[in-house]
Amino acid sequence: MTGQAGSTLTVAAEVAESALLGGRVRLRQPVKGYRAGMDAALLAAAVDAKPGERLIEAGCGAGAVLMQVGARRPGVALTGLERDLTAAGLARENAMLNGVEHRTTILSGDVARGFRALDLPTFDWAVSNPPFFDDPGALRAPAEGKIGAWMADDGLKAWTGFLLKAVREGGKIIVIHRADRLADLLALLGEKAGSFAIRPIHPYADQPAKRVLVQAIKTGKAPLRLLPPLILHDRTDAKHSPEAEAILRGETGLGF
Image 1 (cartoon, helix red, strand yellow):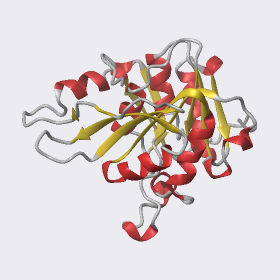
Image 2: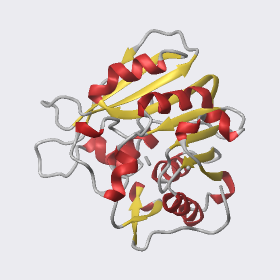
Image 3: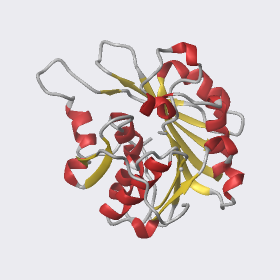
Image 4: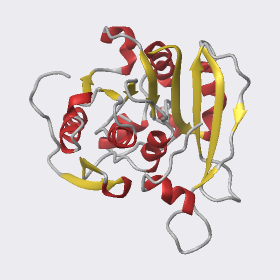
C-alpha cells in the first residue's frame, strides 16, 4: 500500500518470509513497519483478470497483492508502482521467489506524479489499497515505518486520479478502503467511471462494515450494485469465517 529503477535490490535490515494462499505464495516483508495482510488478500481475490490482460497496482509495497494475483491469475502481466525503495526492492525479490519475474515489472515512482509520468500504455486493470488517512490530525501518528502506508500525502484524490488515467475505456478499477470513505470514493471515481459494484467487509455479521471493496468501470454506465457482504469472523473458535478462510487459502475468489 505504500513503486524499475537500477538493478540493485534495496532490502530491509530485518525481513521475514510468510506463506500466503495456502503456501502457493512466498512473501518477504520487513519485520518492522507496514506488513500486508487481510486487505491485500481481499483485493487480490477480487481481481478476475484473464490471461493476456495487464494489471497495474498503485502503491504495491512488497508485492503482496501482485504475488497473489499472479498465483490466482496465470498469464496476467503485473506492474507495480512503489515510491519506497526498500519495498520496491522486496517486490522485485518476491517476484523472483514466486517465479513470476518474467511477467512482473516494479516501477519506482510516486502516485502523486500521475500516471502520465510513467509514459506507459493504459492497462486493463488498475488496483490499489490507498493509504487510509490524509489528515495527520485524524489519528495518532503511526510508527515511522508505517507512515507512508497509512498517510496519503496528496489525499485520496491523487490515488483515484492515477487509477482513472491508468486504465483504458472499459477497463476496471478496484479499490479497498475504509467503509466511511465510500462516498468520497464514489464521488472521485465517478468523475470518469461508473458501473459501480460495492462489497462491504464486516468484521462480524452484527457489526458495521469496516472496509469496502469498490469496483468501477471506466466510462461504465450500468446501475450501481450493492453486493452481499463478506463476514470475516463468526462467534466460533475459528480465526476466520469459512468464507474468509477459503479466500485466504486461495480456494475461492471474491469477484464482482
